[in-house]
Amino acid sequence: MTTYRLSEHSALTVKSSTEDALEVEAIYQPGSPPPNHWHPGQTEHFEILAGTLRVIYGRADRMLRPGDTVDIPAGVPHQMWNESEVPAVVSWRTTPRGRTEQWYARLAELNAAGRPGTVEFAMAAREFRDVFQPAIRPRFLSGPMIAILAAIGRMRSWLGLSRGLSDGLG
Image (cartoon, rainbow, N blue to C red):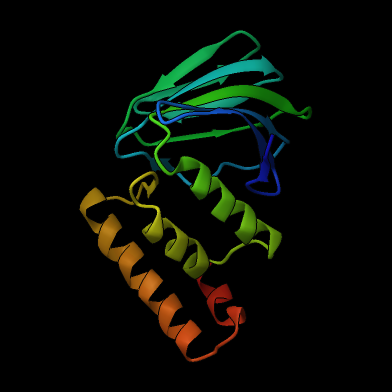
């Protein structure tokens, strides 16, 4: 079983990975909301096993407790995080799997190198836009904004500039 640390507040362990679905168990430590985002061609199903999580999706804003479930359709912006003082444990299924596990691996890599700046995150989001899209409004600006930030990151890399230059952006 592979475990990915996605941020300072969350980690997940892969339970099953097939072409049809990726099933993980995630642990959310108390923390702040992740970026609002959506998935172009995948649905997500969450079941709370322990603790509580706040989820905002579409027009809904819910507090989920053990036994609660929520389904997030493809294309619906959402955020989920732990506002409580105790860790939350969640069973999480993404269908179809697509490149979701590779996306998690990239997030874990960025997290291991230190909290990624906006440019580093944009470069990863651009590469994995088939499974993850930041929910930038208006939506038609999302692709161009991510492309511009990713281009800045590539230019910075080509010029051999340090990561520190992006810190003011993120």
